[in-house]
Length: 442
Image 1 (cartoon, rainbow, N blue to C red):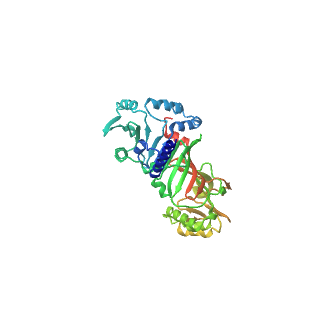
Image 2: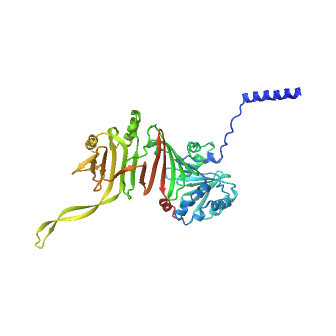
Image 3: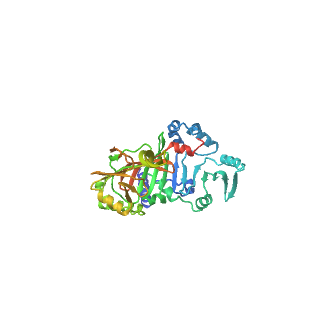
């Protein structure tokens, strides 16, 4: 009995020494082989393909996509199994601002896929080249490159395949790229089926350090939730409502923002002035003077036309061939522009500064911002309105903080949900019509 007890005590003592010398650590998640082959890019993403297709069923039905029977999770899964593709695991995608993009799909087995690629290589427009251990298939008509290894299929579209291959695939130094580390460190959209991450130079130029986008189901368009982190801390909040102007349904670009400028500290104002001064440096806009009078609400509208009637004098010859002046009426389209911002102190001094700098010019009682059409000006006690229409746009209380912008004929809508410190939460919507136009076969 005593021998057993002494033995147990001895084991406990030895175990204590072991824990002291080498304490147990939580298990570390092993790095996937595929993750070390992912090319660093301006935008990287992770997709749970089957779950995304299931989530998008209503979207495809609503938009009457003719080929939707081939975009069900069941069909894609059965097709993928025929070629050894593991679409039940995450699929990785990447893209660059220069126009190239690609993805990596995990494989169950490479044998089925090898047979399919061998058949593809018999086509005239397909060439295959052996580089090291990889046979590269090039579909020249589509600028597409394909190759596989035992555990993944690599797909690339663009003109920089050799650069991507040698820098990230053929290299012996296997590691996860910085952009992918940023994506995998995601603690905002852990359970989403489609997540994009970027910290590209275009974002940094406008003060955004990095951005996350995650898909959210919406039948009318491709809806993305967004989370942005800005470079400098700007501690202010958006207001739930504020003064605004009614926009036309035809407007292509609108801004409707309501910020809590009353709580701006001196430091916050300095940061804001510095950022906006950099963006407007080409025209030397008096940002500091604007912030002295601005009360937080800002609305802008561009797009569509306003039909106006105007009288003019035309000289004609009468029956006796004598010149005579006749008053006539004609109609013309005037581009629709509106700009409104609220003020907490008189705005006349700020308007005069804009005129002195040439940013604003006056012509016969109307005003023009640089190359804008002629605008009427209405200054009230608490707001300033510029407009090109006959009457000033109707005022109302807005409960939105949103930006709608037309870019390359694509209408993007960004909704600001909350903004505090270095974090901006919002949503971005891309019209499904535009996506379908770019994918003609659907």
